[in-house]
Length: 461
Image (cartoon, rainbow, N blue to C red; front, side, top):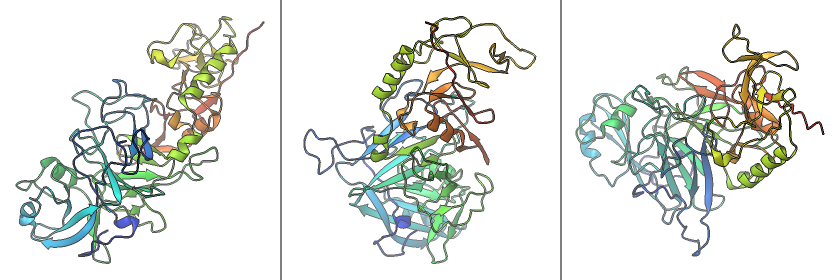
């Protein structure tokens, strides 16, 4: 929200911003002004894209990656609302011709537009997220397909906005991070409600905002939503062993919190939720209509397992020499350094309905029930039979507990509390649907609980 003619903005809901001059660099951890040579910069937090298990299928490169740390910049690049202008819609392009002036344009009718100008904010750093590969986007994200990987090919129509959202981080303790819908384009503008391209404007921004909901608030200010919306869910009890899923909300362009619309792109906004804010918490989920991101704070990451701990758990599990109860062969989880290719000969497999772990075998098929249906030789339950893969994205784990549970039907393995939390967490899908999904590959979960306790057989000797 913007105070007309008043550059002083004290409320989190009025602190909107944007940065320039990123020059395509993916290094968001440049030393802060207070950092001494050789010291690590102050880290605000990390964004983790669900569904990639530690790395994109094509590898993490530049600004396109599965995980990105946001750190204090060398120089503040935030902006905040300054003044508001009421102008004639045909004059919008002239008013926005100054590329050095950040602004949001709200078109209310063919003859009336409102432009909110922004000014530099020396107390904040700005990070932008979206599908665009232009230089002003810090974190490039693409649509994630259920089951893992990015949606590719000419037929894959992306639903993620080119300039999806922006995150504002205070440069002083406690380094609060706030999220806002929409990002500024190459011309430093955000367009909401433009029906057709104006001369001198960015056509991709026009397409982004032409169906966007926008309105005048009771106090005469402006606010709006992006076409497909930016949804946020804060976990109840924090992101820890006692966490429970929270309620999904929608974040506006000015950082206000609303209940969800009837469908993702509906024109009618939800109800304002006055007792909630756009401040990101450890474990907050951000859905961009095609990809879901997890926000982890530095304090929260200290409670998460490290990659060394995950490797130690793998070696400990293999040292127990679990055996296939039928073939009596010794099973072992492969090293993550091999990558996820074809299952190894010693790879554990599980019947996801009962949790019995075996080595691979070809019997027990029940093709009349489906191509992937197998009958467990120990308990006779029929269901999917899949290889087990250890979850390697440590930031998705609630605790450093042992790898005792697997998601159904994909077979990714993690601690019990991590498995149960994600199995209870509905993630947005499509225009108004929600599904629980494996955080490591994005596969929709099935079965009564979405996960299963693994039952290993130890060596007979």
